[in-house]
Image (cartoon, rainbow, N blue to C red; front, side, top):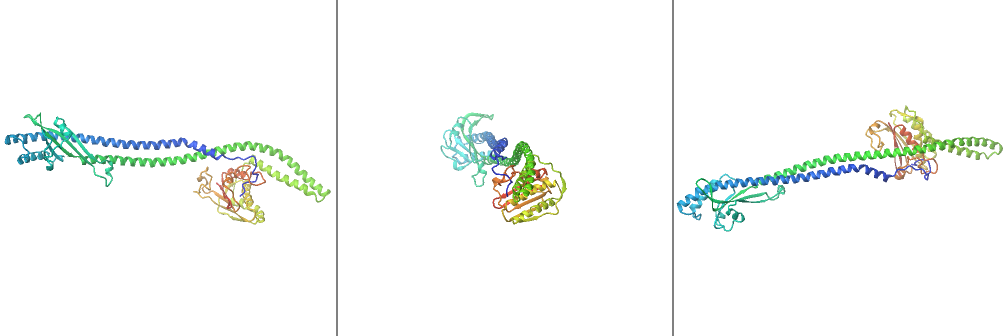
Length: 508
């Protein structure tokens, strides 16, 4: 459809610089993007800190477990030392004169005493090393008895009267994964076996070294499970927080974008209004000055036409040309004045279909001349709306005439009226207006099968002085939009080259 009716090469064109608008929008969203950055960064920091905290807690728990187990082993070893010396060493020396664990009776006695002392306690094995030779003299594990050089650094420390422990463990939080190796933890405590006086005090003389082995796999596994639960709970909490924050940020992002877009649109509209106000003042002044001379020229030409008809019949068409052209110029001047000083609408309740039928009747002869088929589908159940009949008729006529002009010969011009949907899409209702405001509103759609418009032209069709025709002011659609907005309505247009154009008017 043809956009309006003024020259394309008009020196005045009020266009919006889109790249600049996008830069301004990005600048407006920059503070919110910083908020998003710090929000997500803080989540990552909290998650890393939580993982670190779980590692610290598990290490501390393991340390406490080892300290308690070592203290338990020392108490067990002290008790075992008392039992062995009183119940085995002294009776054996008295009976046999010396201790020789190779003697089956002595070995069985020591084995019975050790097992009775450790029965029901958390011990995996008890091993006694000789003090003079690095050889295992006794062990609750028979296969270790007689093994030489089995004692390492810990054995040497115990010989120097320094109790010590050795821990052997494997596994981590990854062991909780099905199929992974099981957790294993073993604590070996080395304690010197000393003589005991009658008062119960230990003497400095060392008879051997006792190795007590405890299996702490269960306790260590519990610590690993605790660490896994901490990591799992922390991850779930972080995931929930991330989803909630992402939802909030996404919603805030959309709200900020809508507000930034609305702010730019309002600024653009304000700037355009200021430019148009200055332009309107100039146009009104010039038009007013032109209007009076045009009236004089026209009346003079009409007098000349009458006189020429009497004096030189057949030449009166020359004066008629002057009359017709001054009429056309007067129409242009009136458009300038209407644009510069728009009238206030005088609203009255009426049927929209009545105005539509009137406009269709006016363009019917022109449509018939162009072989254009007029199709009207008017909803008779439409509610009455507040309209200035003459102003709205003019706005509707502008769109219909443009539709005819977009079709050179033949085609279809279709007009439809209906109730706007309460949940109508944003394509049908202006973005800046609340859709609830248009619930139950009246919708007028005007479709033509003309040549359509490119997307570039579509952006400028409502701008003053923009047109792709060789004649006219380029104010037709600009005045049309002003009239519809004065009625608190909206007008949108969709078009594709070669597929025609559709105008949609929504009136509350």
